[in-house]
Amino acid sequence: MPKEIVSAFVILLSLLILPNMGVGYQTIQTTQQMIVIDPGHGGTDTGLISSSGLKEKNIALKLARKTGKLLEKRYNVLLTRNNDLHIPARERIFLANKNTADLFLSIHLHRSNQPFVFCYYFDPPAPYPKLATANDSTWKSHPLLHQPGSKQVINSFFSIFSTHKKTHQFLSTGSPILLLEGLTMPAILIEPFCISTLPQPPDEIDIILDEYAVLISKSIDHYFMGE
Ligand SMILES: [Zn+2]
Image (cartoon, helix red, strand yellow):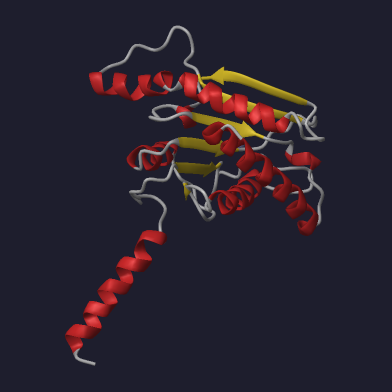
């Protein structure tokens, strides 16, 4: 094969492969709704660690991947991280904003030892801190514009999770969460269960995560399609 054709082929191949390698700076243009799923923590930031040594960062990533798999049939799905990397909050937010995502979902776990589901939307502390520049002001006020949408997302999660046998209580609240600050779309952070209630064997963990992935994807369908 002539050299030019080989190098053209390599360039074409790298164009096809590269967009899938790092999730950090992808831009996808499409008519489908775009959902950014944000697995909490990563890398040196382990998040919670259960008494049996399970790490929140790993469980959150597994659940995010399973949820993404279910959703990608109907939506465009981006993960803020798809491996064990520490990604600063600003970068996660930038990815969602740059892709003009329709929904940002951050997945974490809690440690309350109760079958609770915690859901948070962005709510600034009162009084909201004075802002230095106009740009900062735009940055900070965006999540407030999307607060009604974020509350609607939480209502959808409540509708679906309240039918689930393991959910005893669904608690939602506004909070000045850094991970949701500056997002330009409806955005929530969910802690669907307590890390310490997970069993040890990986296949049993998988069964539970599959169950939650279905609930999360149904909640998102409920929000977008009223189903
Ligand atoms: Zn967390």
